[in-house]
Length: 220
Image (cartoon, rainbow, N blue to C red; front, top):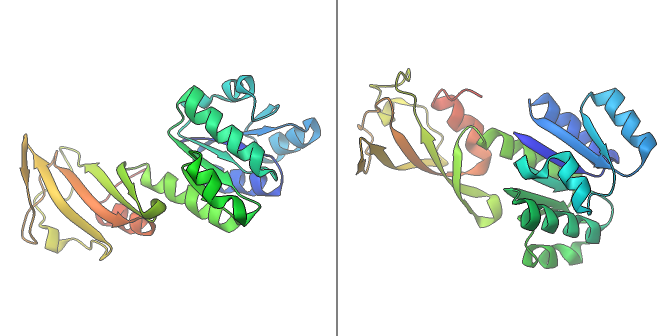
């Protein structure tokens, strides 16, 4: 997953570090040249020097190919402009903005930012969840991202083929609502057996994605 982080302060640094450890392709945009050198040396990631609200800087960072642009500077206005530019100009799939003033949360959401978060812990938790869920295809985010409707395609030679749903250790917070098989759709029951090539439609709480991946033997 390609993630661009705008802002190389403490929040951006620790966020980049956490995401890099999870195998994400991380790029940081930071206006301070000395900070850029420090980040590049310590984290060994791509760093672009410039203003993240400027179209040319986002282009240089690869915004057109980014799965997520996360703006985590200390200025809410800059974070908003960055997210809007990434979404409208480059078609970035998901934008995340750090908000420093709680009074601005509703405004940023109303102006098109996909996810607005406040604390460093919340930002890291949210983006780590996005990385986890990248193993499946999110169709519809629900309740501000707390839940999701996701699609999972099982390989033809999947090791669980022939197993029934009741034999799997599926999290209680996940519900397989339908299975597409050979052009037909069926509503599964506990005794329904999985086939290779099945496409599962699952409604789940987003925090349970790791358990779902583990139960279905989904690799990174």
